[in-house]
Image (tube, rainbow, N blue to C red):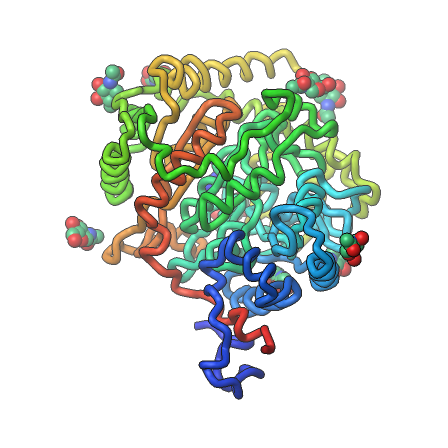
Length: 547
Ligand SMILES: *[C@@H]1O[C@H](CO)[C@@H](O)[C@H](O)[C@H]1NC(C)=O
Ligand SMILES: *[C@@H]1O[C@H](CO)[C@@H](O)[C@H](O)[C@H]1NC(C)=O
Ligand SMILES: *[C@@H]1O[C@H](CO)[C@@H](O)[C@H](O)[C@H]1NC(C)=O
Ligand SMILES: *[C@@H]1O[C@H](CO)[C@@H](O)[C@H](O)[C@H]1NC(C)=O
Ligand SMILES: *[C@@H]1O[C@H](CO)[C@@H](O)[C@H](O)[C@H]1NC(C)=O
Ligand SMILES: *[C@@H]1O[C@H](CO)[C@@H](O)[C@H](O)[C@H]1NC(C)=O
Ligand SMILES: *[C@@H]1O[C@H](CO)[C@@H](O)[C@H](O)[C@H]1NC(C)=O
Ligand SMILES: *[C@@H]1O[C@H](CO)[C@@H](O)[C@H](O)[C@H]1NC(C)=O
Ligand SMILES: CC(=O)N[C@H]1CO[C@H](CO)[C@@H](O)[C@@H]1O
């Protein structure tokens, strides 16, 4: 079971359209293209005053405007972004920096609340105009580190927890996201806009959320590094929920180092989310950036659960599996000890189990009501899932019944019990078995492994049900002769150049280990650079900076 699977006009880039057209090419500063810019490179340039954060915001806004009509990745722009950038520029000018993201624009998924002019809707009109009393903890941590929250990204509506016949990246409020590697490419989901925006440099990076697959899958399909943190490492306070047992917030970035830097900022204990009290070492975090060592694969014990790969079947996955075998060779050459056939003994039975969906349904009924109770303004008076369903089925722009409410109908009518019911614990214990002795955690322990690897398309559920972390990195692309396959709504599901990723799965709160392994693999392969998107914005900093 999976969630998240669960010719472009130019504003400034064209010669005639460019207000800087009179500049000779030699006088244009030679900055790194924004699709390649990293936190480190941008910070160095900001320090050297090559450009300002205001310039950076202007560049990203122009880039969003260039491509958003086609890709729909960004759903709202923060009207305060330029003023915030100016303030951060002033602070830097007098020697003050707030943290590692000082003056860097970041986009966040449209289910992470901010206490500003932006809406937090999960893509639903039911929550348009609703207000919260403070920033979500994650948004506050970003701002405390100096980040500019540039805007909100579009998503699969309700993080893909509404409909059985919708599409990845569609929400009533934001329309349909498409990805940048093939026209009309399915962007995957549910952090669809975050994946697309980060992939082509509409911001330094983006945040996504995951319940089962919603960070790693769109990271995979958009040629990105995604970190799905352990449940409890990143606070869910004032993030529109699905399930307290599975939800987590994480970075989607173009490099492992950028993702690690952002994870450092957003992780940590939060009194508003008691799951964060399970962070080990009294909440003291490891240094995730320092974990990025070229030598990290040397001596690492890495398991390959072949029976999981077999369960997914070959066909479409032939190119992925070939790339996966090549990755194993790369890791061996880097000194890793590959332990083959570290099978998950409960994998086949888990495929038959309904426990995960029962846990999610039960949590959603309670966790959604809690989120709604925290609103300080609730324009459509929705207080629970019944109210939200009624709104959705009667408000024309919600697209009902063409996009049905089958997931909610199942939770409310068929299942009908929540996480205070004794049946919840039976389902949850089943998940604990399939994630533990019968799955990921048991296998790590039995074979004394540092991590397990899988093609990202096969990876999410094994970690989701037990709150374990995953780091995905680019692994390859579908070959140029791939036959194009579209779904019933015209999105391209299979096609040339569509990226796919490699996942490292580990024990709870073992992000630092996974980041190290992912970095050592990334640096040896640099897969991300092998194929370019079919659509990229033209505007670069050189078009913005007036020298
Ligand atoms: C620098 O500027 C910021 C914002 O303008 C201000 O809060 C801070 O006190 C200033 N710091 C110094 C060292 O002048
Ligand atoms: C939030 O929604 C309100 C109501 O539709 C709208 O007026 C406002 O412009 C939105 N905010 C942003 C930042 O787009
Ligand atoms: C968090 O609080 C809830 C409700 O009080 C409780 O059921 C749960 O066990 C707590 N979780 C942790 C990890 O402390
Ligand atoms: C692991 O799974 C693979 C694929 O199903 C199978 O060929 C192999 O025999 C299994 N190994 C063990 C030790 O169970
Ligand atoms: C899964 O369910 C099918 C159909 O009910 C059954 O034949 C099969 O044995 C089950 N597999 C496992 C591993 O439980
Ligand atoms: C959860 O179920 C219990 C028992 O049926 C009920 O009393 C409670 O109101 C439910 N909570 C929510 C948020 O629906
Ligand atoms: C989606 O399902 C609803 C019924 O729940 C149906 O009316 C609608 O036609 C379906 N749409 C598609 C595109 O399958
Ligand atoms: C694509 O090319 C490869 C060899 O280059 C071949 O093995 C494969 O069958 C081709 N696929 C299609 C769909 O034509
Ligand atoms: C910022 C932005 O461009 N938002 C657009 C996102 O998509 C919706 C629906 O297609 C547009 O109405 C917004 O203007």
